Amino acid sequence: MTEVISVRFRGGCKNYYFDPKGAQVKMGDQVIVETAQGPEFATCTEGNHEVEDSAIVSPLCAMLRMATENDRRTVEYNKKKESEAFDICEKKIADHGLEMKLVNVSASFDGNKIIFYFTADGRVDFRELVRDLASVFRARIELRQIGVRDEAKMIGGLGICGRPFCCSQFLDGFLPVSIKMAKTQNLSLNPAKISGTCGRLMCCLKYEQNAYEDAAKRMPKVESFVQTPDGPGNVKSVDLLRETMKVSLDTAGPNEPFKCYHNCEVCVLRNGKGSRDGIEIPERPARYVEEREEEEFATPILTTPFYMDAQLEDAPVREKIGGAEAGEGKSRRRHRSGRRKSGAKPAGEGQQPEKQEGRQPAKQGGRQTPPKDGQEKRNGQGGGKPRPPKTQGPRQFQQPKPEAAEGGESGEAKRRRRPHHRGGRHRNKGGEGSGSAPKSE
Image 1: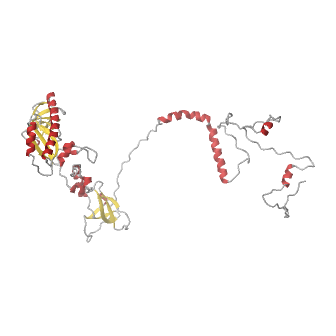
Image 2: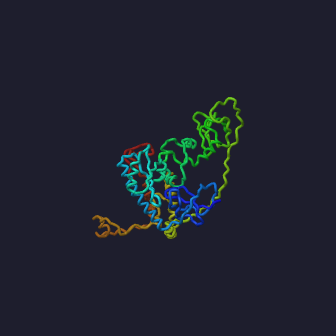
Image 3: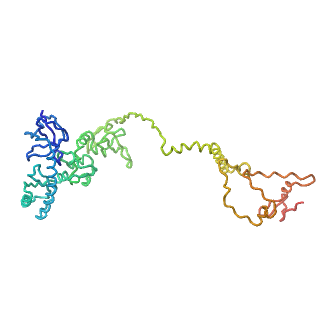
């Protein structure tokens, strides 16, 4: 076991081991370490810890010292120098007419070396470009051609999932990805959907490949001959994540949909395409019953919304105003409407319903129409008897007039003898009809 510290350089995701030389370093501390290219500025990602000897690449480089304020100022000066070198290099590339794209510029901690990263479709002769850059910066110049994946890692960005690129966040190196992984995971083979921003297959296809390969070993292939609880049939599609499959039964009709079965309730008789000759069909397996634990749900506590507090406070006041009388009025209206629909006459024909106590009387100070000339005389202006005001009480039936004195005919008898004309000829009960009604005595 060897005591080491893990550090990460600027713009990188890979951790490197260094010998702390007895110093206690914490995570997040900035240190100066010795590398094959000279001293470099790095950040500690894991403090003092022990690792196996087999995990160390000998010889193990040592940590020089903890970073000081002067070291941090040197790093800031190098960043400004890199931005200036980027602009100058682009101008030199345009002057020489080289078909190359400059991606990034990195300067060493001591400033003795500047590395230019570029991409190109083929080989590029940049010897004249190196001489011009060396004469400008007075330092060692190095040009490195990188691929499109390294370009995406240096520049960074967001993937189709909405998260930053995996290569620029945590991937130590690029994993080999093939189109076979997309086929195993039943993904669309459209290059636009399974390719990243760099134009290559997405690195995340490798993450779940082992799980899919393990599930594929347990599941039958498409067009396999299987025995199900409903009878034999052929597998039409397989869902590796749910471990389910859709089977076309032999007894099913032409328009009947496929049935879905779990892997544990299917017996594979022939894996893959082939003939059924000589295959013995066993008994139907039992159905798969998923056991679910009953979850206890707590009864939710219903609280009154804040905007209903004022309404609840005014509720007793409204009850005092209306009370049960308003409810009785509603029930009466419902009862009357039901009788009208059935065709029965309400009790007390010609009588208006009593006025509800909950309603307010009409306003007295409303607009009044001027009386006519004859009406003014009747109201007392012309010497006549004034008309008494109308009362708001219910209208009463007219009392029947008393019968006439002895020897005379009452009004009821006269009304019975009076004929009723209904727009046509009047016919007597005796059958003799005349055009005029008989005169009353």
